[in-house]
Image (cartoon, one colour):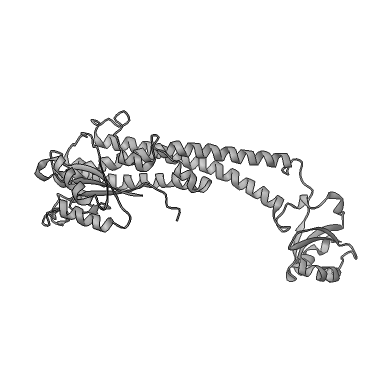
Length: 372
């Protein structure tokens, strides 16, 4: 869901007139909500212009972290889990529409640069924690996937120790046992021709060890000195050779350990989802605060001092964005003032970068996750 954070010039220098005009012109194309911007410290023009450049990058970085958390929640819990994300107990859309500045976390009279640095510190901590927690979960999940694949996959990838019993293996000074995977369609060719694949194969030594829907595993006994020749001959016929080695003590994962690993993965997943819900609220709130600071800075650079503008949140109706922009242009643009596009002027220098160019300050915020 798209929301626009707008800063509108004041007709007759009155906020109530700007608000009534907005309602009159745009009610058919979207919903509008007043946005409370505190009396932030202005500082110098140079500091505001420098901060404007920083805020362009900062807000994009904050948006990226919020998206990462949403994506992590989606990947582990689907769209239903995404819908459960809250910001201060509210849906993200509701939080934006009812936004209140958090004075305790970000004192309004603190220098704006320090406020932005505080926000950046909070977001960086959240991003670092996300990387660690997601990595731990993904590593554990990968380990489980690997063992599950070995336990339940095809004969070509399953753990050979689960298929072969030690008594089925001959391993002497001169003889060894190999295991060969062949397709069901090639089983007869194997039985008829394995003794002729190379010299020094023990006759009638092949036995069926295991099979699934597509393949079968056969054993064969041969002299160790022709193992390489046999492997080459098997490859030429499309057979896969697997060797059996006695497992080291405690090297294989028991069924009990596998179940414990599954429980560990589920517990880590639940812990990650719980953390993401908390982190999302903190990150999204910080992101919106950063956008409000940016709206304030750009408004000063656009309209001048003292601060005099009406800040609003607008949610356009679907497919009505163009008409809504046209109404805003008609209501709040004089058709002549284009100073922010004047290449020879420094007045609008702070409005460069990704800021959308309209006769009012406009920032776009998305409150939902797009899985595509």
